[in-house]
Image 1: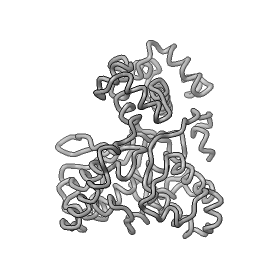
Image 2: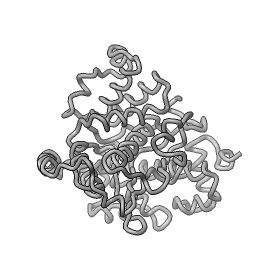
Image 3: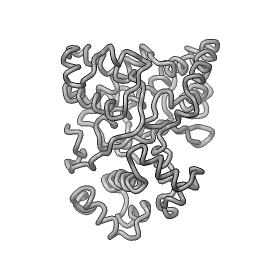
Image 4: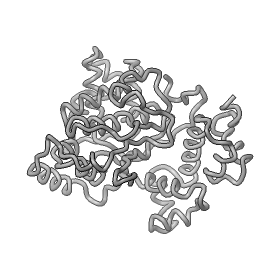
Length: 347
């Protein structure tokens, strides 16, 4: 699949250079899976510009575009939609980062999820994992900040969710409380996804998420090692200073999502939500190579494509939910994004 095109065949929005960085561990497991499948080390270097020893340096971080391009190069070579799940299985069998080891050593599922969110920036500042309340004391673990158009971002979302589900099953003999959901469209083949996530795995949802019940949160991990967990947490406290938060643009995107359809999304309202001045808002976004207008536009684009492709919402309802003045305004924006109209999408 051409990562520059949406699954429906329409050209995707050109993606600006993404802010943030991530540990090289993910690419290490992707490369190892490719080597097991017969791709040579020299071929990998030619495809990605990286050699295995570089991504085996677990103190190294890679930027977002390097991460996504690495996924895309290996996916094009292997043509295996199940690669993200396979790579996550290998990662679960051989943890290679302090965060992964801390999760494994935690006392309960709930504590493990707390550690993931607390030390998430030591793993990635490209996207965030949010733990949100669910019914009866359970939680939803939501992946926020990964788009649905670019192949590399979809692969990273599947890998991340697979790691969560594998943790639940391997360390606590538990399973998600409801079908695992992905915001992006289904890959060409999903047999590997169904084997791990179950036959009810859902694609094209409103967000990427895993639901965990209150009973599962309380489950002890069979791999719990409290002493090791304390040592690892102290180490991560040293190397995860407050100066390394999730990318500022992700925080802005969250503020935009909270306001869409309920109030006007303006620099003033977003700045107030983040407790910064408008000048600081614009300056920090510029430092990450984007603007509030671009983030608002891209967020509306992603949500519009999801809602309209699902064919469950009238165009007027989508326009209201995304904060457009009218359905006509949404039509104009949609044509600019995709070259067609919402009705053309559903034809």
